[in-house]
Length: 163
Image: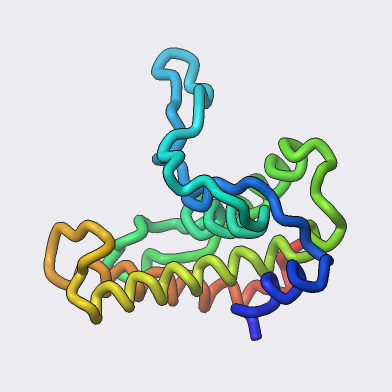
């Protein structure tokens, strides 16, 4: 089962526990207005022990989508292979060789896992009355969930192309 593979690998010692941000998306990076370069990571209340796969997968869920996270028109929601590959290359380079072979092998799976997890979290919040995620309109979290599930569907379709 997709949801258990990463944790099973951790329990079996095939994946190391690391310091993770756990909310790795572009709006949690401060960008210098003049240079356009990243200055620092913010929203550090989510930092804790976890798997590098969580940070990578969440970044892909957010950064390789062609649509906003709460897009209502699902025909605009696509999984961009070029964005995935660019991010993967940068992530591997930025890791400086510290990732294990198993972590690298599981990167595509982590994108699917975190997209599924986030979709389920949005749907759960919607069904329980929108108490966790801030919403700005009725069915906002339902729209978010649908977007994540559509993105996951495309990831599944392109799975054989992911490295």
